[in-house]
Image (cartoon, rainbow, N blue to C red; front, side, top):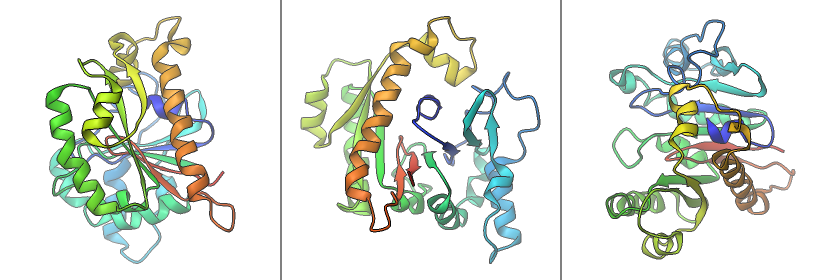
Length: 250
């Protein structure tokens, strides 16, 4: 959500973590005035009912109040519903690629059997988020290996560090063999605005956390911009996050 709110241009945040949603009961809890609809689960049910039709994505997108250029496709509440999402990913990736603007997809923890591989394949950038600790770097290694096997060299893959650990960005880059695109400060008060819908401080909009999100967004776009520009001038799908999908046509 922080990346979406600082993104330069029209953007959709697609919450595609099979293990459950965070945005609706968090950031959107006291901001949403109308119905949130059925989100990703409703879209999956529509896909089941009409297997040959184009997915009616826009029927399930909720605008973020006060943010004209940001929309949200909120995820499933119950992780038991994740089993219904598998057949959706391929069709959803096609719709996201053709959608106007950019898409940031939160894919949750990747590497398991429920990872939305179709969304990863449709992406032009994948950013793994982690802390520079021994435990998280150790866990990241095999997940990045799985990404390399799945994506090859056709997709930009990078890291985003949350600065809450003993190791430097250079050390993490050396161990994992991946570039660090940005470092986010460990700022619990500001982070709770996104995770729990906390009331922002007066200095929130100029905080280091939001400025760091802005840096991350610009570096993602820069990383894919020149390499992904097609003959028609269109930039293809992008994926970021500890699985996020981003796509751009600007």
